[in-house]
Length: 179
Image (tube, rainbow, N blue to C red; front, side, top):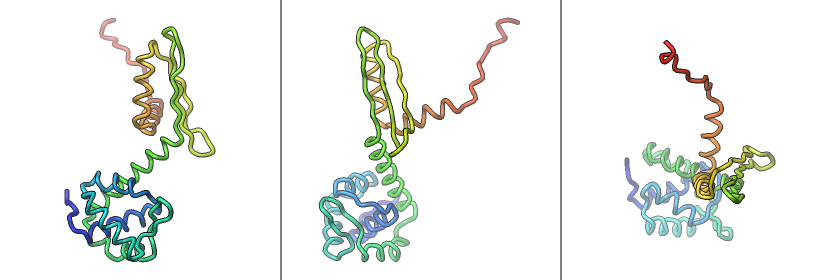
């Protein structure tokens, strides 16, 4: 996997990322995304400062937004960044943003007593419920483990539940023992 180690490339990657995702980010969020693909924190910090100074990035409160110069840089220079790297950083960003959205619309609550516990799990998609499910557990430990695994990645939990329910689950019956 190619690594980005040139300050100019880091600037282009930042512009590309904000241009393609059409999102504002905090410096911390940008740092998490960029570090996940191997971009050095100090190089990233210097690149952000340079981009702010040139107007390629605009800071509005805590949020970084791409400026007009940033759009132009992304459109012209991003083709010089290897496609595999552009895909990788875009994927990392989209996964990161998806997890932020899921966590904001996720509720996972453990209730119960006397070995009768339940985990209520719901994900909302803004004005509609994507999933609303209550799972029963035989102990507090089981309920806590279910909730912990759901909270790690709520969208993945939702996707796995839906995928399991969408499968054709014909019962498996071993007829050999009857022959």
